Image 1 (cartoon, each protein chain N blue to C red):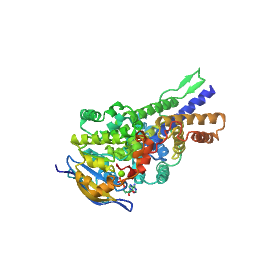
Image 2 (cartoon, protein in one colour):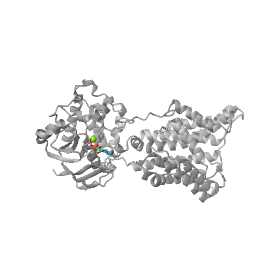
Image 3 (cartoon, protein in one colour):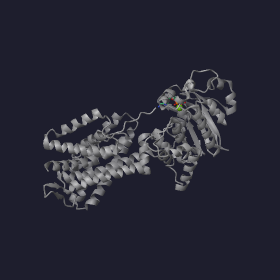
Image 4 (cartoon, each protein chain N blue to C red):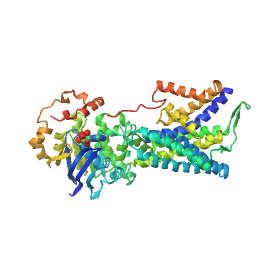
Length: 293
Length: 271
Ligand SMILES: Nc1ncnc2c1ncn2[C@@H]1O[C@H](COP(=O)(O)OP(=O)(O)O)[C@@H](O)[C@H]1O
Ligand SMILES: [Mg+2]
């Protein structure tokens, strides 16, 4: 039963990673860049929910919607101001800029909201489950997080595979020039991608903080790196891959905390990543990138 | 029969490389005009300048009396000027059907009109219909070229720019592609056809331009160019060249050969 408890907690944490990883993977798949500021967008989303819900008593749904809107605007602005001018330059320049944006957001949050930790209260208003006569307790946050991440993954896959803007995204991902020849506004599609990724980050922030209620300007940094790892683990660019990678990462992290060592759990996570990448360089579900003639 | 496309004093650079040197040409409504030239002459650069994929340094490009040389590429398509790019560039992760749908991405004239054009494209290129649910990346080279043409037609263009549609195809397929181009033109689409395969191109064209290292060196009626000694010498195999013509026919449609052919395009001139 202990094992099941750890497993469920792992899946719950993994679902948060999955939500963040979905944002990473979308942006990477379509804009072909690693948006290292993604984790910090989560933090901003967390603060928005904190002020709306915890401080001002807004309805939790409304609070999350406000946070999604705010993060979408933030994501689009970051892309327009920081990344777009660098399109076509070596990817290293973009990477360094993304790290810069990440610090900018963290320091901005420190200025605005101070660095003292804020105590977040859960946005989930329902009760948890007690199974096996109370031996296995599953918190409401866990249930909501897992369901949310599954639903979002399915909706995203449907969106990309079945809708017109989704097809346009795939076209931009494969060949920007040819996409323009179809009349696709590449800038618009990239903005849309950042908007979706950032909205997911807001949801992830609200759910992360509902389970782990300490909010600081650096709150997004570690989950951001873990989720990036998860996205690479699952095959960056792949939507189901990001989901699978996130869940597995959460499980591995929690089980190694429980059975091996709390201090070493992160090291173990990365060890597993390295082994997987040695065996499958494209990640679990990643496609080989086809080289064009 | 006015001028549909008019290019004046076009200059295009790659960094400090002056790729297109002050060229001017035009295409009248209803014509097939071909631009022939060797590998690296500047044909693709000219195409990209027209479609907006490549920023130009100076000059004017007018389409239907609208100045398009400062317009974004994705807006130019909606004016009815489509480009079928060199190397086909179909979206390999999407199906044939989805590729064609993307061709109609910018259209606003409603489902029915688009459905009509689906029927028209499938009529013109029946092989695509059979393969409509297949991933474009799994098509053969010839089928991909047909898809690229069909996709461009789905935007309902008044004018179609074709960049080396015969590249990498077997002689049989080349004939099929050129027949398709003639049919497209008969359906009322003005065509600007860029080719290294000068013989076939001059055969179907009304007029032609010869481009050499970024300059237009000759122009005239296609039949005149085809009988011009200089053109015959340089582009119509007046000089015998070793080519791939000696390869067995079945090897022509092997995609792995495409890159090899691409690099040796000069030796693929028709003899
Ligand atoms: N992306 C590029 N960067 C630098 N030079 C280029 C680039 N593309 C083409 N060129 C140069 O511009 C000239 C014209 O090329 P291109 O238009 O592709 O010729 P063509 O289509 O007739 O084979 C060539 O000298 C080529 O080397
Ligand atoms: Mg070319």
